[in-house]
Amino acid sequence: MPCVMCLMCRCCGVILILSSFLFGLKASRPVLNQELSTLFNELWTLDVNRMTPGIDYTISVQGKASFVSPGSNVTQDHAALPLFSNVNELKLRNVTTISRLITLLDNYERSIGVAEQVTAEELTEINLFLDAVLKTEVMKRAHRYLVSKRQSSSNLRAFKNQLRLIWFNLYHRQRNIGPDSCGFEHVFVGETKSGTELVGFHNWIQFYLQEKNTHLDYKGYKAKAHDLPDQDDHVLNLQFSWHGVIKPVASAFIGTSPEFEMAVFTIIFLMNTERSTTVLVNIDQCQIELVVIRHGRSLGTAYPKLMSSNSRHLTQHSH
Image (tube, rainbow, N blue to C red):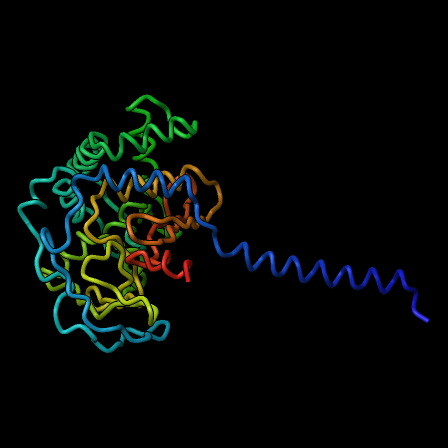
């Protein structure tokens, strides 16, 4: 007859394995971060340079994008028209942080594996952009928060250098050549890998400008059946091709200012030390997962993932 104690131990072992498995499942889904939700909504309210849908820009989401098999650059086009039917270009030119962002967009080699050459003029453009960002109420509030959490110095020059290191420090994505990438290029500009894969590219201003210049073709939105996007959604999951290379699914804030995006992702970057961090927050009427991946002391990538919009996450909980 088997020992009762052995049986009990075996049962306990099974329960432990099961509970750790279930806990692991639960742990992989982030719980809502209330502190950051409150802070990011404050930044949202302070973001006076944000564009208003239907007034400063109009988007046309059109059809739902098809599945693209990995490594393929063939997809059906479910959007005959561009995503942006119009954008207030006067505002793009007159908002200092946006106009200075635009000057940076042509400073980078598109291909990973091609070393970046930084000119004195480009260093000046980075400086001017960071100066403009630091003058905004959004970044001032983000800075105060980071100082209160002992993640940043209250000295403005030190904070500027910290932003420069996170976003503009050049590093290797491909080992065998000189530094070929940085966080800013990956997130705000986009990069191609071996000419067949599109990585990064999470900024709506770059999307609009590339679409206007016919380098980019919007293919449709990506969404769950019950959560179709609207013209006024501030985060979209999209499919598009850039210089003929497909991005099967990309996500980006729409209409937000560069300082808002930089502030949000800088805070997550500095408040965490893991290589990859996902934070669940409610901003305005959206529930969003914000993903930040480090590359040493700099940013590897950062993007928003729309979980639900139009406060649907609130109505679903109340049923």
